[in-house]
Length: 339
Image (cartoon, rainbow, N blue to C red; front, side, top):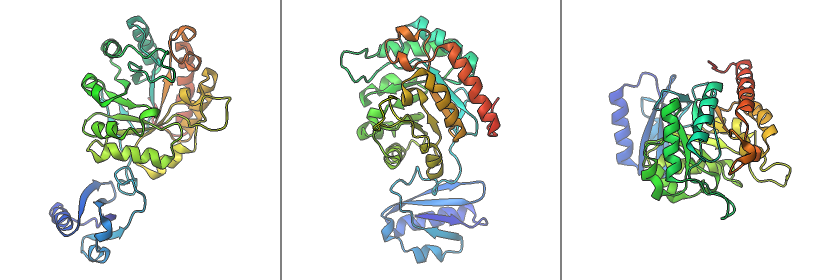
């Protein structure tokens, strides 16, 4: 249930009304203060709430029930866009274009530091790199694990770029205490026990859509994290499985405007995993920005032919330079904030 309060409502009236609702009904009240109005979101057994009683209060402008099962991630509850600020001051969701770039897997200090320097020079604001790698084959490279995390921290020290890397298990959380953004991969999007634990943290969570997951299922996974108290969630469209075999996955570009309409959370797109083909990354990245994505996460390797994982979809640093330029050009054409 959503309650929009009248502009004249004071803080004391808000506090008293919220307390009254929680005492009368089995609900919890969350308040969002927008630029135009104050919105109260009632979460719990809202079927027990007397809507006539609520509407009759002097400070209430309007009240309506919400049908969608996701509440905290719902734009109806939170009309303004959520902006996530990283430790270095970088913002995601503020109208700009956030470029996250780096190798699929961290392979060595020389590799990750070289790539980090190059992508920063091209305009990337965040460094990605896999330390723990979920692979389809048990014989494929599984990542350097804790050593990979240490190498990512070394690259951050040298470049100043915040780091994002994927977590595989809640048991690994202590190792991620110095990671700036924790990524939940497509295979773990519905690992609800992991999502609950991430909800107890105060770190931004990059939540990737599952290979065969619906948009509502993605938002419900975000709801698991937010229900635990962590509202710093970034949604990621990375392609879904369809009957098409030419590409690794099929990029659901329609998911970008749909998610932006349904939710206030930032939305980024992964054109690398969506296509699995390096030459498709640029056009898909441009399409994502034109569709309204808040950012992109792109795989970049200094020697893709010898990459230990996903070399076919990785760009060289020179190729990433070109993609970054084109993406920022598209952003400017659509009135985006581009430095």
